[in-house]
Structure formats: structure tokens, C-alpha cells
Image: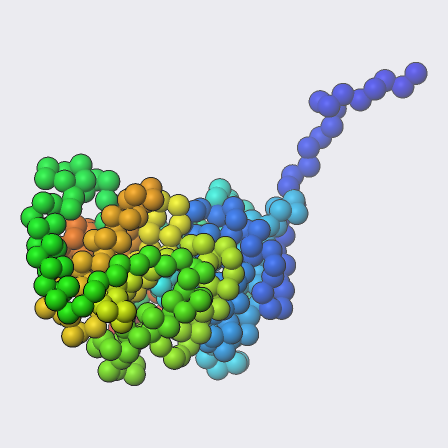
Length: 365
């Protein structure tokens, strides 16, 4: 009689880790994004599809699987001279350019990613992105283990507002004096016409809301400068946000606060919401109402709504620190652009030209 085998008699085989390159964007990006940290779940298939379409890029995707489960998705697109074999992670610069990895993806997964990446490109640009970003930091550590050159350039400091901590401070948040000033400005703003404070969902934005935001941008200082980063008037940025919003998952993350005066859009605040975190993407106002601080009035209402909805933190990103400091935001991680260059000639050339890359950024504060 054959003795039955017990579970202890079986030897567990090590997990099989592999990286595969796909032409175009892989549907597996969504599988990885769903298991990424909440703050990174916007990095889904449609996010990259919108970027490649809006900015005229051709993408490939590296997928790392652990025993058949996708754990890292790295979309990339070529830039620069073809023979240089340089690539970048596509996307929108706000909130950041990055790629998804499941929470807990280990060093072995990133080592496999880098080994396959070196067969595809001589160099990869990642960013602008935040210092400490989990996926980017793990990738940088992995390329260093493999002898790649790593060159960064400083872009800006970020700013964030912890609304819960601000409320707990003496005097609370917003302070009574701030609310009093806001009521004063609102009273005088109302002399220009009927005020209507609205909150738009992703569906509302697709159904004409983006056009209302564009109307404000066209009246603002942004509309007077063709080389600025207007996000909703005609152009590549406008195409990106409209295409990204067609994905139901992304649409649920998008929101906008809008003030109209006698039915005409006067100021807006546009955000990407993930869990308890709000990424403040863009805001603008009609300068005809500037002396009454319409933008300030709107974003205080917007943040009060966010607190009511259970949000606790606002990531303001880079830019003018003056009004952000006034509202209570404090300096957060630096934002950097990264060049990762394969060992050999690419790394040697990269180190030679590293000063040029760094000088193309900004001086750190």
C-alpha cells in the first residue's frame, strides 16, 4: 500500500518572476493600478492612453509578474533622436509623472524590471515626481544596483495642507478672522451679480464643465500667454484631461469647484481626489473680480466641502507658495526629474552632460 504524501512532503518552489514587453499599452496596467497605493491609483490604462494620444506618443509597456500576478507596470515612450534609444514615462506633469506598482512590490521585482528595461532603452526619464515616491524610489535603487547612472534635476518644492492638523491648532481652521474677511469680500463680490457656487463631478465636467473652466482660463492671465500651461483651453493639455475623464474610474476621481457671477464663470478650482488625499491640479479666476479675491473665496469653500467628504490632506504641488502659505500649507517633498542611463556609453555620456541636465532645472531652495 502506497503511503499517502503529506503537505509537509511537498517542496515549495520559489516564485517565478518575469518581465514582458508589450507593444502599446497593456490592459494589465489596470490590474497593477488597482493594487497600488491609493495615492497612485489614477495611474491606470486610460491615464496613459490619454497622454499618448494627446501628446502624440507611441508607447510600449513593461509588465513584471510574480507567479503570474502583475506587480509592476511601466509604460514608456521614445523621445529624442531614434538612435539614442531614450524613453520617458508618459502622463501629465500634474500631479506627477510616474508608474504604478502594487503595494509591497519587492526589490526582486524591480531588479527583473531593470534587467528587461536595459534591453529596451539606453535611458529612461521619470518625472517630474516627488522625492520618496515608492515606485520611482524603488526603480532608482534597482538601477543603482545594476550600475546605471542616475542624474536628477530639481524642479520645485511641493506644498501640502494637513487640514486635520490645522483644525487642531489654537484658533482652529479656517480662523474666525479669515472667515470674517471672506464674508466681507463675498458681500462686495455680490454687487457684480448673483453668485452661484457649484461643485462639478467628472460627469459634469464632460457634459460642459470643462468648457466653463476653459472660459475662465481664457479671461485670466494664462489666456494672454500662448506658452503657459493652460489646461482646458484648446491644446494638448485640454485634450489630455478630456480623454482621461472618459474613463469611469478616473471620472469619479475628478472634481471642480466653480463660481459663476450672473451665470458667467468667474473662478474655478480643479482637483483629483484619491481616498483622503486631494491633489489640487489647477485654479484660475477672471481678473475683473480680482480685488474681491474670488479664488480665495472659492478654495475655502472647496476645502470645507473636502473636509465634509472625509478628505484630510491637500497636495498643492509646486508654484506660488504665497497664497498656499497663507492658507496653512507647508513645504513638502522636492519635485525632481530623473534620468536613468544604462551602464556603458550611455552612463558615461550622461555623467559628462549631467551639469547641463541639472542646470535646465531650477536652483533648490
